[in-house]
Amino acid sequence: MITRKPLIGCKKHIGYYMKIKNKYIIGTHVVFYEIEILREFLESIKQALESVENKENVRVELLFNLSQLFERIDESRITKEELIDRFMKEIEYIGESGCDVKYTIYENDEKFYNIGHYRRDLNYLNCEEYDFVIWGESDCLMPKEMFPCLEHVSAVADENNISKYVVTFSVCKMWDESWKVLEHPYFTDKPFIENDFDNWWSLKYTMSQEEMNEINSESVSWAQLEDDGYTGNIELTAIQSPKFDGSGLIISSDLIYNGANVPHACWAHGEDTGFMINCMQLMGESFIQFIVKNVLKVHNRKHPKKRMYVLDEDDKEGIGDRRKKNEKWAKVQQISDYNRNLLGGKQGRFYKVKEIER
Image 1 (cartoon, rainbow, N blue to C red):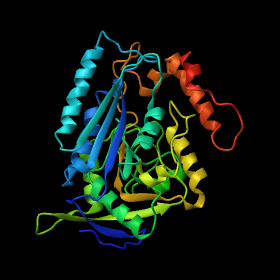
Image 2: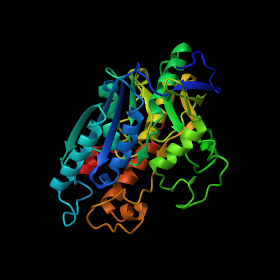
Image 3: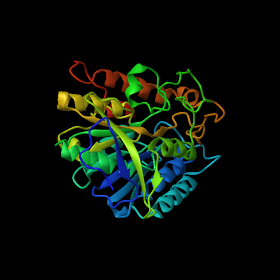
Image 4: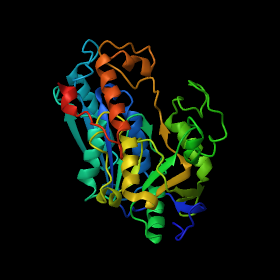
């Protein structure tokens, strides 16, 4: 179903239904206030799994973070027990897809554990067993074409003797020209409008699964075959300098095996930037990022239900405005930015997590 020996930068035919050769783990750090949007992310994974015959080759791992070290649960609206019950229903939901499911519930209110810690552990602990590690995110929608595309990319990489790489799908209209290489063809010629929540191509627009599916179905040009299968076209390109955000990032296990990972200095946010810097330090000019140019991944950064049930936050305010009022978290973010700016060959002392906990 897949045409072999494709040229990078060309459109090539792929099949939709298949028995996948590789093993994948999709790991996601879910904070308690993201419980209302988790189902949308899991639905996108569930739809992606529809194309896979051997679903046991895919593990979905979720860590549900209930720690209240910096942000407390508004128990007048929902209790911790109710949150756990909601989360377990989501575990049951994704389990219905037939994939392997693993989950952890984190409740330590004294030891800080955040997305940087989780993604570093996800990489380190799973690169032995899985061929690809995928960074999930609650506000992300993965394309239903994900597995046929990744199997195709894997074949291209093997035929070109490339083993250490990342893969990204295309994105919406971004801030500046530097992101153009990642933008989906339908989005790239649209104007960037600051604080635009209404236009479908904009960074802050909240896109549905149905909208994403419609865009991808048209751009991939799926056609039904006589055997009830489907065939379509993907446009694959590659760059040698990393450019990505963390949501939906796909990492080959060999890249992690080579030592690429999230630096310990990145523990609150900026772990994607830290990983990019680490990749470039290790790989230099040999770095490869494959981009599936005509298949869109959605990152709903400003989803209206992204931050729910946080004590002393007003759900009617914007996402960014709510968190800015949390002085503790503002300090964490400031220190995270400081650490991130020291990454690489710069001298200076990093702040450690234990100092924040004190």
